[in-house]
Amino acid sequence: MPLSTRTLNRTLLARQHLLERSTLTTAQMCDHLIGLQAQDVPPPFIGLWSRIADFDPATVSAGLEDRSLVRITLMRGTIHLVTPADALRIAPHIQPELEKVPSRKGFNFGAMVGLDLDEVRAHGEEILGDEPMSAADLRVEAAARYPDRDPGPVVQTWLYQLPVLQTPPRGRWRDNSRPVWSRVQPWLGAPLDTSYPVSELILRYLRAFGPASTMDMQTWSRLPAMKQAVADLGERVRTYTDERGRTLYDAADLDLADPDLPAPVRLLGWYDNAVLSHQDRARILADPEVPVQRAATSVAPVLVDGFTAGVYKVFVKAGVARLRISPARTWTKTEAAQVESEAAALLAFLEPESEPRVEILEPGADLRP
Image (cartoon, helix red, strand yellow):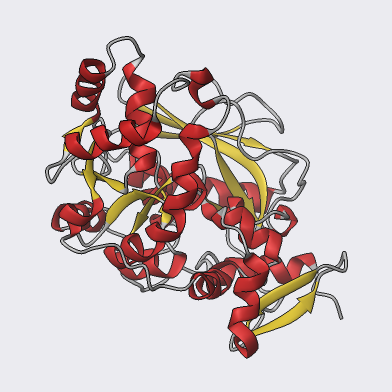
C-alpha cells in the first residue's frame, strides 16, 4: 500500500522531534538533524527551542565559543549550525560544488569576468591564513589587490573557494554581529575528513527526513549521484511507494509513524530544514503551490495539525514585542487557542524584556503592522 501524505508528515515530524520536545542536548540535536539553517541568527535558536525541552540558548553561545559547535557553509550553499565532526566530514563533499559558483555566468553580474580565478584563490589563501578575519578587513585586502574591481564579489569568491566558517561573536544568542571568517583547519585544529562516504550522509538524512526520494536527497544536499549513494547502502535501506507512485527510500531499521498521532502546534524558524529539505514538500505544506517563505524577511511557518497553516513574524518597537500571525485558512477556536499559547511561549523566549503581544490576523492578511 502506498504511503499516505499524512504518514509521511507524522514520520517527518517524529524524526524532527516536532511531535514532542526531546531530551537531547543541543549538540546531539545538531548531530541528528545534520545541522540547522543559520544564515540568520535567530532561526537555529527557534528551531532548537521547538525541538528540545527546556532549551537553554546559552548552550549554543557556549558551544560556539569553545568550538564544540560551528557555523559553516554546507548543504545548498547555506550557513548551518553543526558539530565540528560534521563540519570536517561534510565540507569535503560540499566544497567542490561551492568552488564552481564564482565561475558561473552571471555570478555577481559578471564582476569576476576577466580575472584568473586560480590567482584569486591564491591571494585568498595568502590573506586568510591561520587567524580569523572580518568581512570588512577582507574587503580592504580585496580592494588593495584588485583596485579596479568591486571588492565585495572578490571576497565572496574567496569564501566560496576556501573551506571557511564563521567564528563568534556572530551567532551567539541575540548577537547579530557582522561575520568574522576563519579557515576550517586552524579554527578546529584538524584537517578535513575526506574519508566520509556520501552514502553515510544520505543514511543520516533518511533518519532525520525520510522516507525520501533521490530527488528529495538532491534537493537537501545539492550533491550529485544520489542513486549511487542509495545503491551503496544496499540492504541498509528499504523502499516504499508514495501516493503518486514514486519510489521512496528509508533506513531499513526505522519504523514509520502512526498517521493518527496528534501533532502539536509548532512555530518554526524561517528557513527551517523540516520545510526546505524535500523536492516534494506536500508532506508538510498544506498547499504546496503557496510558498511558505514570502518576500518579506524573517517570515516563518506555523504548523497546525502537522502542516503549514500560516506564517508569522516578530516586530519589536518601543519595548513592545508583537508576534503577528497570518493564517492560511480559517482556524477553529481550539486551533487558534493552541497557536496563541505556543506563540506566547515563543515570544517570551525571544523577547523576555519586552511587553508581549500575540496578534492572530484574518486569513491571508499582511503581516506588517
